[in-house]
Image (tube, rainbow, N blue to C red; front, side, top):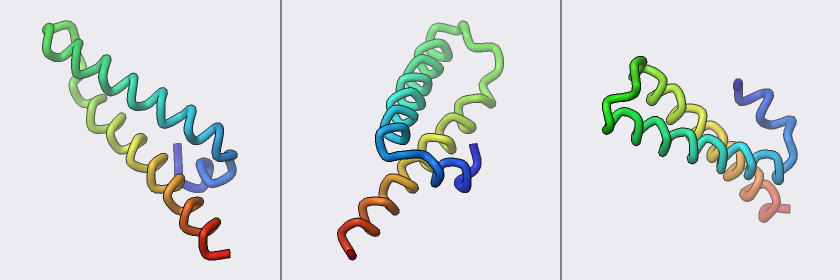
Length: 67
């Protein structure tokens, strides 16, 4: 997802996406450790998605405290 699309979501939806991405990253790392992951390039992509979601959540927190 692009940051523009993430900014259109509510905070609850962002928190859900954060949980999903975090769980997905855990599962991918587990698969890699057990040798079941074929495409290892998906791990950095998932990390980027998680970072984008966390960044947008933080932007919302900052904007709500400055009001």
